[in-house]
Length: 191
Image (cartoon, rainbow, N blue to C red):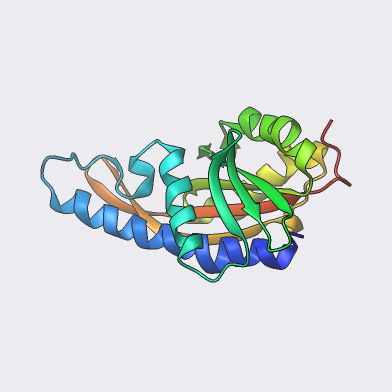
């Protein structure tokens, strides 16, 4: 059975640090290569492909002693975790673009909770986002409010954050990358 402590370990101890290491490596490569313009995010958010994030998380999990075997894209589910007793839990990953506490991609997140996770409770959702560090609390609260009709609460979130870089008009500015995870259970309204 997948529990809150498993989610914490996945998000805070394994996946979050792996994404941070990759963000730093990508940023260094982009900043040192004159072929890439100094505009926009210079780390993981440079690439708009969430499957790359899936692969990085998968790689981190299989290289850890996480107590679940993980498969990607099994039956079109982003993650399927198998425990030693044969039980399975599925997870979905979405990128969430934020601007001043508002967000795009919320419909995709809600649809994944309703359509993909409801038949496999408990399941888990992972969300990546980037924002100004000063907007972090407002953005996390906004996300919880938007998902409240599905039974999610702010205290349900496991969050790992790290600094990332964005260039705006040739000015280097530090932003915050966040990996947010939460469990979707049968007790939550997913209809």
